[in-house]
Every structure is written in structure tokens, then in C-alpha cells.
Length: 327
Image (cartoon, rainbow, N blue to C red; front, side, top):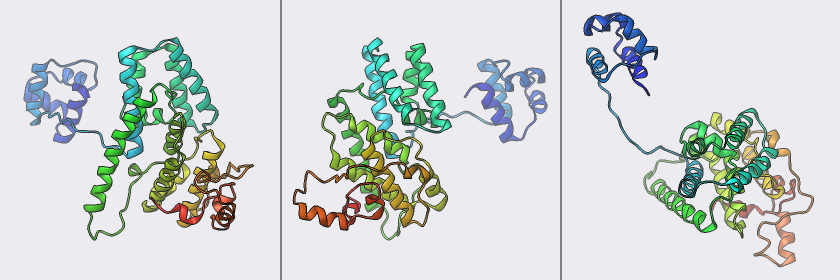
């Protein structure tokens, strides 16, 4: 925020006109007008005089930016990428990797907002603008969050670097969970806001990141999806409708698209909402049983089919109802 913005806000809050401020301070009204319209920058001495005339002062407060867990996880991963780029730079092979990743993300992305963000990434790659790359990677605004939802930076961290960041995220999440468990005695169901849950688009981005691991932890990924989608049930009607509508960007992998769509359809039905159109796109040709590596008895697999909710079976996924318990 520059000095003109501060003066404009101070005039509004004090309900003083520019002409009155000019009379009080002796600063010509024409200059006050130019300061407020950003056509002229006041010196520090004149700026202080104007603030005193308005009876206000400027205080700066530095506080951490509040972020929902998935957004913070994405920010920390991209923060690590930005640090790595700052230390070693980015060569033509790196820009080529970004282009390859961007093309893949674009092929699985729909919607005008994501389209604009993808175009922004394309301009950044075309211009080789490293400073803008750093800004986007660590931007905490809504724009930065949106850019990271369609990020082409997959594969820029080694597995060791990635695991280190994820360990930090898990410690943060565990601390928040402990506070929620112990800090609300007798408060009843916890109502969540839109900023406190992971949207389908954010979950899809998270899955894409997880799939880049040499050996993805499928069990962990399934459990996280179950837990995060179940949290939607604590949203109010307006926020829940917004979350259910936010599925324009898929994972790009049939199995995981089908699972995310099935879990979304399940929550929609439990809460009395219709299945979103985007959650009707994928149906697997071959059945997928996410726990297939832990259960080998074919008799149990038959039983699992009979206990799998319709939302799963319809998409070719075998996941018994008890497997959908929040863990």
C-alpha cells in the first residue's frame, strides 16, 4: 500500500474532506488531490503532516498468513522450489520441464479461471521471467493460491527434499488436530468454513504431487482423500455447494479421478445434494480395489463388492463401507 492509498483510507475513516485537510495543514488542496489520486508522491515530512492533521498514524503489523492445510502444504512445497531456484537457478531443461508439465495440466483442466492462470504460467515460461516465477511460487494471495492449483513445478524437488517439506506439514496438521480435539470440550459438532477445507481442485493437485513419488503411498493417499472429503459434511449449505461445484480440474489419472468423483458423490448424497456434473465423468473399465495389496483372499474380495457403496461401484471402485470411515 502506497502513501496515496493510506491518505485515501485515512480521509474516509476520519470523514474529513480534502479541502478541510488542506486548510488544517496548509498543504495546497491541489496537491492533496494529487497525492490521493497517485499522480504525486508526498515527501515523508508532508506525509507525516497530513496524517497528523487527520489525527491518525500508520502501524505495521507482521503476522503469519492463515492458510488451510492443503493450501499451506502447496505453499511450503513451492516455497522450497523457489529456494532451490534461487540457489542454483533454472536452466533450459528446467523451463522445458515446466512446459511439459503445463501441457499435461492444461489437458486435464477446465474453466475460465484456471484457463487464465494457465495462460499466466505460459507467459512466464515464454518470457523466462525468473523474478515473476519467484513471486508466483510464494504468493500468499488468492491469485497465488490459484496459480499453484495448476502449477507446472512437479518434479523440481528431489524425493528427500519433498519428504522433508511434507514432514513439516504433518507436524503442523497434527498440532492443529490436537488443538481441535482438546480445545473444544462440549462444543458439539465443529462447523467449518470454506477456507478450512480442501476443495476437489486442491485435492486433485495434491494427488498429482503424490503420484510423482518413486513409490506412491496409495493407502495414505486414499485415507487422506476419505478424511478430507468427509470434512465437507461440517460445512454450511452455501460453502458445501461451492465445494461440490469446484471440480473443473481433474487429476489426469483415471483411477484417482474416479475415486475423487466417487467420494464427492458420496458426500453430496449424504448431505442431500445432487451429484455435480464434473463428478459423473469417469468410469473405470477394470475394477480397482485400493487395498488389493493387503487383502489377497478372493472370498473376502467378493464380500467387499457387496459392501461397497453404489457411488464406488458405479465408477468401478471396490471400497467397502467400513473402509470409508474417517481415519
